[in-house]
Image 1: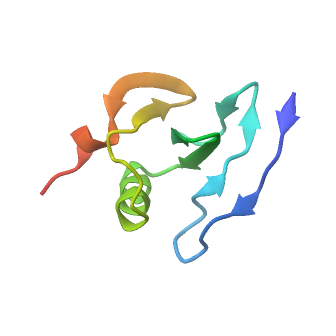
Image 2 (image 1 turned 60 degrees about the vertical axis):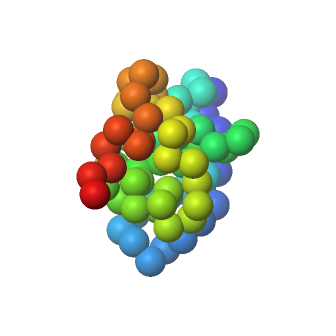
Length: 80
């Protein structure tokens, strides 16, 4: 089942950050997080982190790679 929700949240960065396209409950982007009932995805971990920080999203959100939980949070990838 293919659920397409290409509702772009912001377009001031490269082709990232959609209320994501989901196939069988998994993001089609390399990196993604689940925020409430939405999945936000990006092909760049750095851009995903930047978006999370810029938009006040909790950085302790669980990170998914290729639709599978990594067991790590975005916070673990943030460098001062």
